[in-house]
Image (cartoon, rainbow, N blue to C red; front, top):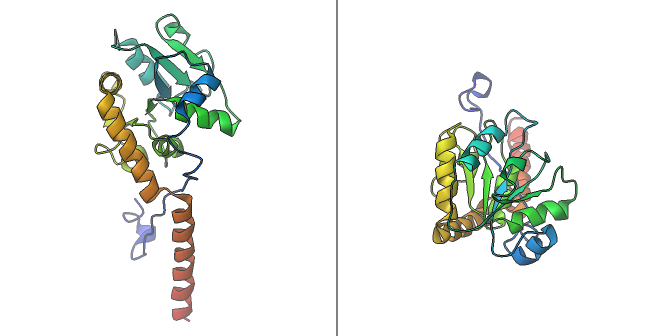
Length: 223
């Protein structure tokens, strides 16, 4: 978009993704995180980042997808943040762990670590920090096409993207990962590797420093 803008015509464009503390956001500690969050044993945990109070987070599509899941080959826990009580219709069918609005970083980190897969069906997203946090924790991520999320998750090779607003495709993607452990593990490990290669906070700092040095040297050269 920057390259297509007349404002940026003939300008250099630098892309520097945000970075994470990859020692903090890591795949380790899954079982302990589940105990702290009260997740029942032997459950497959679907982490959901979608909530009713924002029109851009795709909550209605998640609800439709969950309604259509039907019988699965493993008991499910749905783990949510932000708005409480929005998935009460699934109580009795699945365990619902509804954290509400989370201000505690350690609880949010537990939510990433506890999940087996992460669903983030935003319909508008400038970057998508929670997607790379989930990948850094080794979780496969499901997103919609048409926002930044498919690019930052490297879908379809690493992230799993489905057509924008398509609840049926979202349902099928969730079911596919629920029922295919080997693919969850493959995409989760690939997401962690991508985070190490692209989203390390030390790499972010180095790239930013290099950009400032480049701009400073370039401006001196024009004097």
